[in-house]
Image (cartoon, rainbow, N blue to C red; front, top):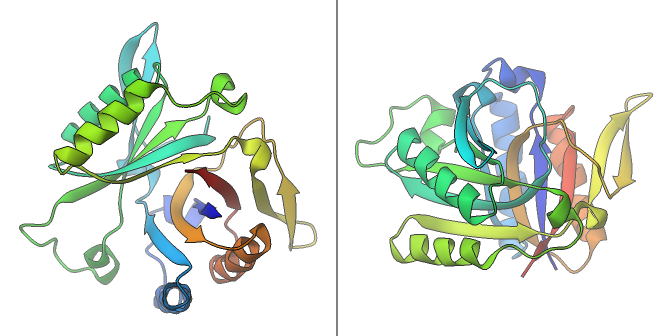
Length: 237
């Protein structure tokens, strides 16, 4: 089974604090072990919400809101990782995707690159990568498949060299979530979830034999991050 493990934003990230060297090193070791085992397939982190954008549709008219955000409708239905010229083009593509998805809200999140972690300047020829987050709605949660227009648009982006990867998630009734509960212990909660107010900080895509294997990865993940809420969502092939 393929799953997406999603870690959520914490207060330090929203303040703009970079991850400590210890977190970078431990996370690199964790991903390296799962890569070697053939389990880790993809992943990325996002910059804080202050540099993100959201496209909403009020009466069919797209409206762009720039961050920061406090957390609202953060329940995701799918993702598209794109490579483009900058935030303005990413917002335009998010608008196209939102229309294709039936006027669904789309979040535009800049991806954290290796030079961001080291404080190095961006290479002159480096593309700008963004994660477009398709937000869930009642139809998605009831099991409705994505509109055919979404697949057609993503296929066109792939032919154009814009789309790097995309996934559709199963509804939240198939999800499980690890939260910090009293007294400072992790508690696993099964979906469905009516909402999520914790914003996405990053994701890992795994191919695992069972949900238990995904939980083991997530438990190692949140041991490194300490406070972050973590969701596990099955991917629909």
